[in-house]
Image (cartoon, rainbow, N blue to C red):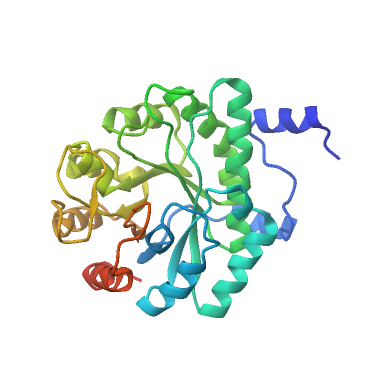
Length: 302
């Protein structure tokens, strides 16, 4: 049994934890032989669309999403009681009962300050990675801390450097979501990260709304980072350069056809996540998400 010191040393060295409940040595060994590429483009929806930013036990998600026609779901697990083994088991059982499929876990951001903060952050992200294995998915998504606060971009790099070997061993992709007013905000931030970390298991979650909100050119992002884009959040933005201001699809400035045509021309493979992120979902929720599904369904390639 690991004592506290050994546990912290293990996290600090970036090694994987002992097998999580429900994971056999055989399944972990099999995952090591799997490449990180995904031979598909598929559509998914984020529970933040139905649940907002609060902890509602994913009740709205399981009630509304089956009505809309989505099957693939990204679960927001910002809250400690949503990443316990028993709660993840409840997500799995409810997915089986409703015909939904968990494809990603969205956790709280990177950016803890100091070595002890980095160790804690590594532990948290490892818990998300083991949560993926419990649910049968292979992506975690996190953004950074507010710019000029906490550990900054250096801390994000430290944590990702520690996570890379475990991500490979567990065959889980760690995706870094850009966010307005955040240490993961612009092209220079990602250039610094990817110059420091050359792992196919550490990559970008490209959020269209947050890049538009800080006037970053989506096409420049695709050209520079297409080989490191592992996950895509689709949201419309009211005005370029005006910060995070999400509006229903079609009411904002984003040219999704041009964006998706360019992205897929670079051989993007993975999920396109519908993520209308409001603190409280705006009505009509079901109608808005059905329109989004119809808009993006033509880009699915299975």
